Length: 409
Ligand SMILES: [Zn+2]
Image 1 (cartoon, protein in one colour):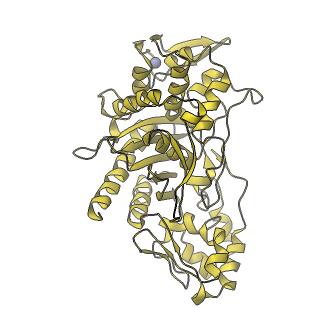
Image 2 (tube, helix red, strand yellow; image 1 turned 45 degrees about the vertical axis):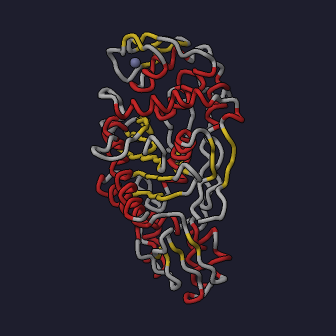
Image 3 (cartoon, rainbow, N blue to C red; image 1 turned 180 degrees about the horizontal axis):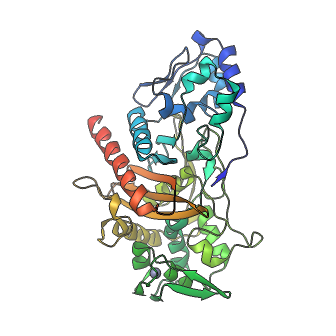
């Protein structure tokens, strides 16, 4: 995990709140008119909204408007926000969750855990307490959702599949558990091997590394990087608060095709970028700027077809992402909502350090007409995996999002 170097001074924000005059400052509301910040700077949802409003958040980005008494209406659904935060906290693992409406880029929930109570900061806290909040590895001040980056790991195979399909390299491959390249051994997660893997669809469903090592062996690194870029990796999304741009693999960094094709090799993305890439898959290929504020128009950035990716190939990837959740052997099967909407998605597990891992699930639902794109990331020890930890957590958040949507037509 890497942390964005752009971290505005938190003391500045506190000063700004003080200077702007408590009663005159604009309020912040969610999409349903629920209060996130009152005019006299109380935050009823406390820890659950800290990273939206706090350090590097909306209080600072919209200080001029708020100080002039203008209120902000967000796309955030406060009930979904607090539920998602509660689920993350229950897991006890540091992490983040982002839910985006794929049809327009509206951010419905964006949470990071651990967090802090912004009410305490307005009241004033000691330097020591503030320093403790910035202390790694837990670092509660850090917005993991937008300012921390992780290797996208196997969630990137959805994009690699498009590169493989684009070069017509999507035929069968055999996985013995190991592939040799550049004098090195590259491993599949299944040590005994997957045997014959019929096509890219089966490879994505089973997340077979060796398939991708072999199918991409003759691709230039740029073919993978171009697809990553088309889905927004390597650039800031344009969201209204502090975010990291992440990083793309490159020959200068020593990245190789084998590492890159499985989402490593100097690839780093924020949970927000990963959720937005899956929103782009869900909506058929339009990359939007994720918006926290309820603007009049969605912020369309580009389309994948304009970047040379075929819409028909995206349909193959979408079918595979459904199978990854619905097939009994699919690595994302724990994201399935029993009796609920159909979910599509992909798991990933990335090493952050030798003994620290990030578990990831990225996907969308319902598959027929997607309303929610999601990314869940959790940090933990070597037994952590995206399939076991983050897929079920994503299912809980998506089920809650669906219930809230049905309650408020
Ligand atoms: Zn394999």
